[in-house]
Length: 543
Image (cartoon, rainbow, N blue to C red; front, side):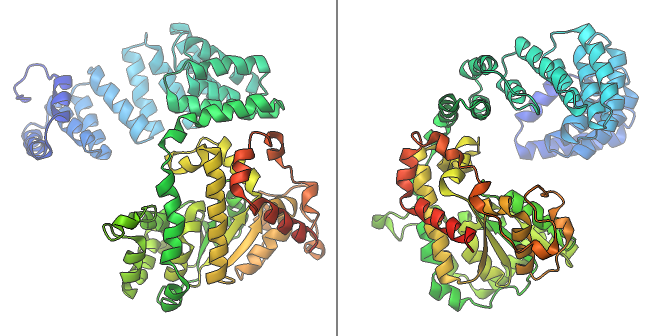
């Protein structure tokens, strides 16, 4: 297509051509178009074409630059204006800039309600909810059946703390479109306790939806709502439906292989041989444990300290383990056919572990905050304790523990990603939890005293006691900011009293008891670890 000489630039045909163009041809075309733009700086079609090419490569800043140039040359092009709005709003999240161009588009097409809705979304993002409502009123006048109108109205009302109108808006949205995402927002709306009748309606949305993933999330949310109403049979039925589809992708053999592979790799002999080869920094802090075991609460306590930076969940070490064969099942008949986790790390030179430390620092942004301790809260780093210790022998590792049945039930109820497929089958989840339990016993054996362990039930009951002990373990001075986001009636109020631990079971609610019959396959697979944990908690209470 000769853009320079074409009387009308067919942008749709050009975009289609770009999508089907091999990369080498695309690069040649991009160079040709760039040269054309230099020779024809006043040609808006060429600027638009060049912008579309940049957008294909996800170079949004350059794409926007050329879209703006093109728009100055062709101010009446709705396609140009629409493309610019979408990139600013959806890709760059530059809401103030997008707002300006959406307003121009609204002047060009005042009859379109969805432009008004987009303006409202921008206003909400720049914290102008009342102005957003005015735009939504205009959109409603134009088209009260606009699919996007009512969900955005619900977001604005939620921002304003008006849960009643937020609920009405979501209900109106569901009348227009039976969308599981909208139904989930309704069921989980803060301050809203749906009736059994209301839950039956949204359950029909899940049952009739073609959006399998959205329906799974909705079933999980409906189950939690039934639980609040103490309708436990209905709740568990929804949790089961939430997991039916995801459980089909569960690779049981390879998922469990990781536990054995780790123990075969990070043996006592290996850890002794590699003692001291890693980076001596004591700044990294790792929070590990099964999901839903209190890792987030522990993270929030530590992050309150002025000398600690919260880096969130960094998959660096776990990704390295997976890359080198963590979950690779070794068929005894093909034992030497594939590289193993054991072979890789046992053959790795000392410099590899030193380089891993430097790479981790770069990955985490540590070098920009060298005077701070940093928290890495990736729960599944419980698999990587041996590697972490080898790379950072002086790093602090905090292991969060929770009652196995309560913790596993919480995993089962949540709509996790494919990574957590192990939590979609009750019997397998019990087996997985037992393997995790045995692995942590293994770390205690080969790395005695390396981990500081906290119990979820103790943390929520005796928050200040646990918090002070953790800060002491890290070798830092106590700071009251550690309790800013965790203060409660259970917190001990004076420094002289903080060592006093309250009885744990007075505040612990064993929610799993409500589902004891349904959970029998999982509990049986767990074996004796339930009784062991109960005994540990009892001993802690008496301490």
